Image (cartoon, one colour):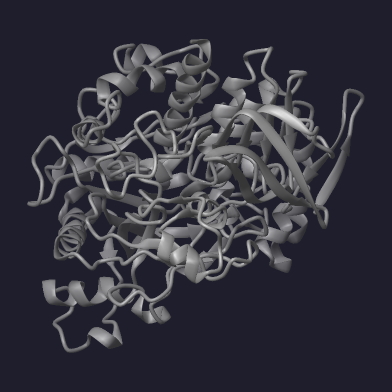
Length: 602
């Protein structure tokens, strides 16, 4: 649903959901409605006059067609449109990003909202057992993709991640090679603090710490020091281990997704068209060359052609899904679905993997009051600061090592969660509950070895594909996750957290009652029952040389055996990076655009 906002400068229908509908409680309705109205009206937050101007009808042909406007596709499309002689079309299956989503504190309320793909994995025999072997995969169906809904974490992973990619035969993907593309995107607002060796300024993507921290976040960092984990000033810099108050993709307390950062500034380019609610159903292949696409919009199918290249940036699920629908993939599987084989490429949909986690809950002797209220709203609207300008405790994360890795290659991420200033009735000092305050901790293992796949359920493009993540099928993933849980529990013994009576509140899961609570055996059972997925996926269109039997794209992201077609998103990662994946995916978008520009300049 859209909500009209009028001013003397522009007349824009801003997308939903509204804050009051996200909160869905009568006690919150009045306050959240007022907050929603003021946020929509404030240009600096909603960006109502800066957004892209989508077209209703595409032309018959373009030089380049980019499919998907998420973390990778938005970057690539914007960069290609910098060449004024090139005519570029971006097709996005969803709509524009929401106005409410620009407020950092509301990030968790956006997850699973009305503009989500609502993916679920199936047939998990080692994970998500309490939900019948099916894990929820939240994924934003909107311009900006998951960068419009995530926690804005700006973590690149570890330099070894990229050096490993290069060692797999992917020339040009070492950390030395990719660092300039991270820096190219960046406009670091704290360059004097983090330095220029690893960071850049002048790019379209704002990067800086949130303008607000609650007092408990400092206690969490003190506990990390006390527990021996250490604290890093910048996990993207020299000290790559420890806890950190990380930098994020926002500016002055306002989210900057890939769309806001890259597409909005390109909105007036005459050679650049963006079509929303345009779901691509097939890539047209003629004589082993990608020449066009078919897409569905407003109840009608359309065809548009590309004279130079098609860039597929549908994401970890939709990129392999569309390749399969277009006849590119394992021959046997395609024939079983009644799809004509355009290119037998066995790796399409294979090598799928995701980081896995477990959610621990704690209580503390702090009043459980709402962070959001009229005072917080007034501060945010006036100055872009206060509780609404941050994600609460979620701005703290870490990179730690288990016994499975080396000290310089962290494989564990502990991330606390709490103190979010989202749904609230508005009055000051109102209690959320009469009980103690609850804080959760994601204990995650970031070097998964378990591999699954994406495959077709049918040849109907509107049927969701079959997603089998195969979580926790490798013993090392189980061991790594259990060690991550044990690291999280070490924090409870520190003086910094004992001062709050920080106490684990998890109780014995019935399915694991045969094991002593909190023993290693118990945690092995618990992580299989109540698995938390990190949604930091990679690999389903693996990058690799032609000698790699599962490689889908080459090191320049060209689909093997098909001319004029590249994949530019997280699905090309041969091994997922050791942290959140948004900023690496935007770097992939930069890299892809650079490959294309250099190719056509020859």
